[in-house]
Amino acid sequence: MRVHLRSAIAFGVLGDGKMFLRRIAGPLMAKVKESTGIVGLDVVPNAREVLISLYTKTLNEIKAVPEDEGYRKAVESFTRHRLKVCQEERDWDDIEKRLGCGQVEELIEEARDELTLIAKMIEWDPWGVPDDYECEVIENDAPVSKHVPLHRPGPLPEEFYKTLEAVTTKNIDEPVSKEPQLKQ
Image 1 (cartoon, one colour):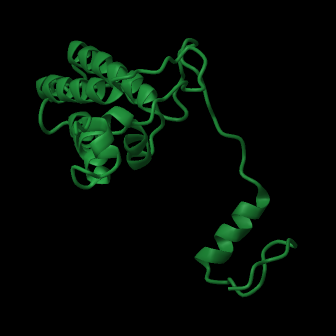
Image 2 (tube, helix red, strand yellow):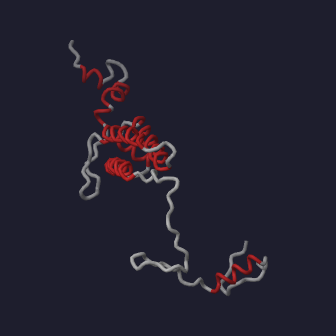
Image 3 (cartoon, helix red, strand yellow):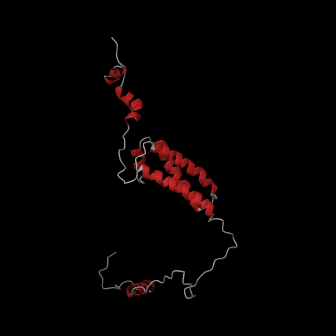
């Protein structure tokens, strides 16, 4: 009697059919994303691999930024975390749930944008300001050129000054406004 492999597995003739399905057929039966639900953002069938590649490239590119810069530290931190999750999880749905930062397709766009920004930051060199660089400080009453936007906040409400005085003189027992006060 000849037994076909599929039939044998289906009926458990060759052992635990569930274990076979989990180990061998599991990756083949993974959930398929049909749409992102976002206009103009197509599904990326190999999103995990694309993310791993982009995050690895990001970690290499950011090395051109000085080690002590906050930008580099931030990029390395969140990129390492995201790369680790992508390496640990096989399914796009699990990656999205663990990261909690949107869909994998959105993460791909963010990673590409970050790579573009890294290149721009290296070009602009904002951390390369000489130690002896002096910038002009404009005091509140100093004249300001017409091309510089002038923002002067309006006066604070009278209630603010009353509250401030009550707090600084430790006279907090009596309410400052006629509005209902929360009891502590």
